Image (cartoon, rainbow, N blue to C red; front, side, top):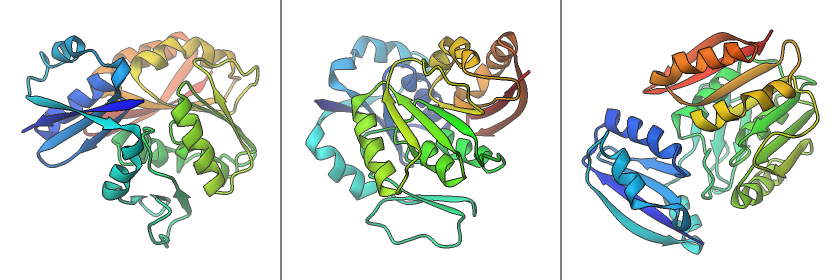
Length: 271
């Protein structure tokens, strides 16, 4: 399976944030931002240039397309992947980096195609808000686990059980490797499109995108109880009112929103 790399040139930070939000809802799985360019990655079979052209009506920037064979992906990430440090709470690094001291939780991941290395604002904010949660002995659902970085952190924070779901086989394989690298024993990885675990959770983590979250709010409610915390991101600031209204309609009380650029991360609790 090949991936396509779309390079958007001469793009501002504001344009980049808006475009990432649009692309993440259209099948693009990973992004790399530099000072002057944005690189977006999508499976070759899932790409339609007409869809891209429609999005570029909102952010009119030039682009080029190139093919990246799957076997070249690891080498590319290893060249560019740098550790991510979220204050003194958590650090995310690859196995080839030196250990990071003076943080509560160190997470080691193999930097593959899966979205969720901590570099993106949404993952950073999810971890930032997890810092204030007490997960000791809690049952956690990580919906759209990606690299399993949030599931791994949940175990390190004392969660008793973590069910991690993703629809992508590549993400599940990568997550299994990452869980093993962090000596995790309490993460159950499941390849699935929707939430259908039959369990009730204390905390639900969902770092995906607006459409997927909205489509699965009923499923989230079905596996929640009074007091269940829902922490979600993959949403831009312009969609905050819509998200708040939808949460309220399904019985969630909004408690807190933080923002990084155009992206937001929302915390709610079941009434």
